[in-house]
Length: 378
Image 1 (cartoon, one colour):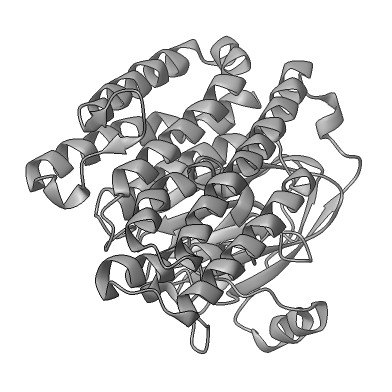
Image 2: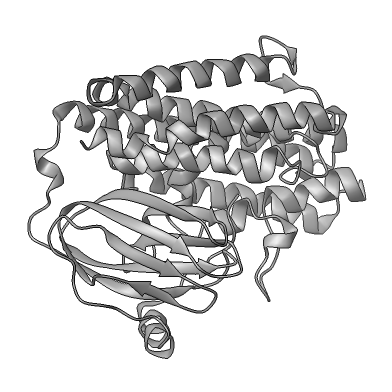
């Protein structure tokens, strides 16, 4: 689950760019130079408005008082690459691949709203056409994986939705966690479209002003907290299924590159660190460990597909990633109640010390995983 960004029309985007005079540009960088992005609570300064096609690196620094998110966006708000939860006073390096065309760099203080944006023009050829054929194969296989996860989610979601529509509280509770697994494995792909995640996976505290609360977590609250299924919940269940079918139909159109796979793997670990380990994600159902496992599996799949190239470029990195993935998988397995399924202990039964152990394992993996994107484009 990410913070909401409401999709806007091209006209609204242009108007917003005009209004946000605090978004300033400096002189263009030379070819190959990183773009320096300085984010603050109401400004977003970039060192370049033009780069050649191919690999682009953003050197991000958050000088604001709020956690921020920085994104490279297509004009229609689809995400090329992003980094969430950049804390105040911290820095991050984001590596991405871009083809020739028009883009925007967005800083989203508080990780909400349209954000402060800067135009970015990418010149020249596609760049990515010259990359290692093994990376093209990795992208193709990951695209199929993402589609398979969406396809496999629909029957599980239909089981969940039918239980809600039938008013069967216990059956709906039982189906809830499993219905989310494919989504959690490939969430960065869903998030890249901008408008689907806020409909499907937003929590109550992530809502924008005036936004109607829909999706899994709205139904989660009804099932576990309110302990009721009414006409509104039945209607919301049907809408959830419609939105998931929309996601399923769009997966094949997602912009996927080796760097977006690598960055997406890191984002999945960030999802774990900011939502699952804290218990905030499924705060009523306490099925956080199911989501946790899905995020880790999705990150590991992206890594395994990129590993042949990363291992050649940086063998020490892949050795460390193998070690940390194995350690986290082993730790998670301790919380399974059934080793052959995705049944985990309720997260409210996980102690403070155990949560700290899980958090430490996630952080130990996230640090080397943040270097994967750079390793695959060396």
